[in-house]
Image (cartoon, rainbow, N blue to C red; front, side):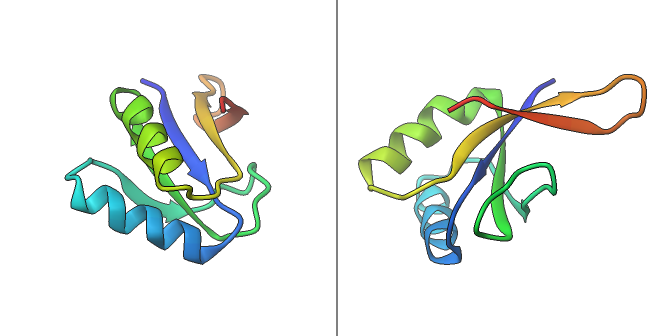
Amino acid sequence: MNTFVMAFDSSQQALRAEMLLEQKAIVFEMIPTPSEITAGCALSLSFSAQEVDRIIEIVKAEHIEIRGVFRSNPSSASGDSSFEQWV
């Protein structure tokens, strides 16, 4: 199953997104930004494909600045994930 990661350029934006999504009872996890993703912030949000459209809608409506949304692609050979920019 694909998971998505939203990366930010600042901790302030990441924490603001976290607060808004918690208020709306959306399921996500705050994680360290994966090393494969270049971003100005060490914090990212991880969430399921079922939540991606709703999260993007909320973030845009609240004018939260993001670096991008990335989809994980699990590698069957090594068990590691790679990421491709989705938004």
